[in-house]
Image (cartoon, rainbow, N blue to C red; front, side, top):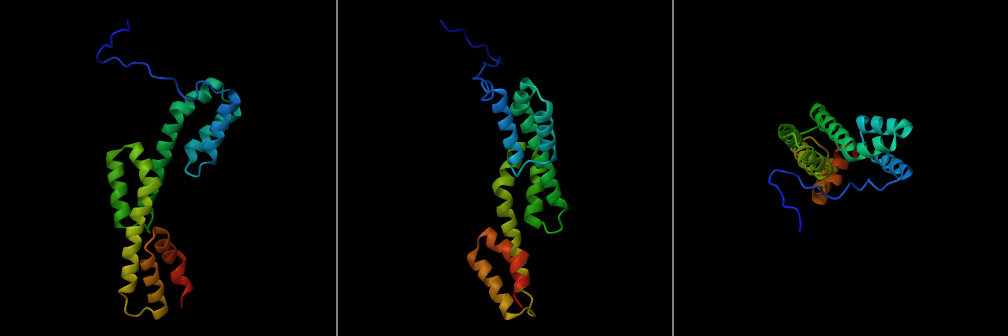
Length: 169
């Protein structure tokens, strides 16, 4: 007969995916965090320290709990830097402020992976329309801006603002 579940008591779940890993496998998992372009200073510092002298237990504990905490701190630094960036537009700043108010590391990570690109695209569209509102721009610049808006991908909009507008005469 199964033991009754007592309300308010957590039931043990399956172990961590890191439980059965050897020391070498744990080092590989930590090295992969270093290869991730989203890893910031805290993740890199802690991962390097573990690779230099971490025990199996320390590496396992870091992968289970320390890594998510370090990544969350690095993500908060990344979005805070966006607030200080003079090129960040209204939509990016508004969404970053909302993320900081919510203080949810999963929301921040998801936004950095997908939402930032879309918010930046909206700000880029506004910047291109402001450029088009200038009656003194050249026909070539007007055509290049129109082409970027017609393409309407976040990458095309960003490329036009960072490169394309300077390439046309």
